[in-house]
Length: 346
Image (cartoon, rainbow, N blue to C red; front, side):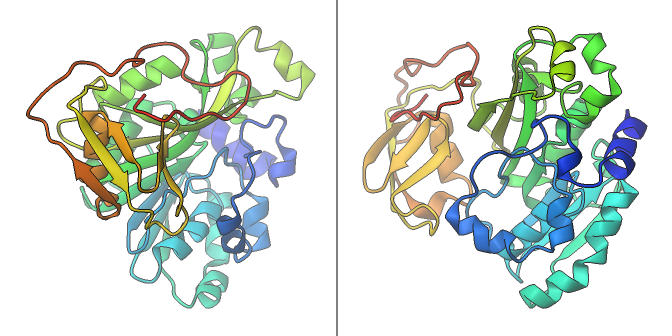
């Protein structure tokens, strides 16, 4: 599968217009604050973008960031502006042709930004331990529609957990299926290259993440995918696919369910891109200045990470009130494509 993916993205695809589906192409609107950032990225780098989401969490100034499957470097060069000269962005990819594009424009971006804070490494995202990267040295790890392409997702998550600092997060967009993908789809080179064949069943992903140190995966955004190409769609049967962005925090003490300890937070409105409300994930849209009840896991995600200075915290863990109502199973994605948020935990 490494050779299939390398051939597809290195030799068959010349730009994002060559894709046969919208699985590996982000159809969502670029937020206004992101447009000037992307405007400073070289046109050739932009043309070789095959992501499915926006992987720029807030508060990256001064952070050390790793991009798994960085391709031609679009997200690397975007995030490089957000971390600033005091931060660093490292991109890892296994496709020579993509890395050649990324490296060819390093000088262009260094001149444009006024500093050079990026580097690119050839390697496999399943073998991060072979890249001479120090364990516990990254504040944030990102990835954009690449984990599904890996034949060994367990090793990817194991490597991510090893490289993150305590309180760090894995913030990534990927493709998921509403059921386990059959071999007929998984072994189809085109469907695999289009980010469908290697997609995980969403519940298998949650179990996999939990088994590798990420007890409470948080869904940020999602959208159903339209295959577009009728011939490809006919090979998929009743399978449904979704593009989804998750954030996984490396925190000790997170529980496997949303437990109620009577805690709450108040957002100060001090994050530049989110002055009126802070969106932690799909179910936590926290209005500025409002007391917002949270479960113990959410309290830790805000209190024990780089987000802490922007919140006031109410309560502790001395008294337990049971499970938050509404926490439970079921497809987490919105099959209609509409956007919705809740006003309380879960």
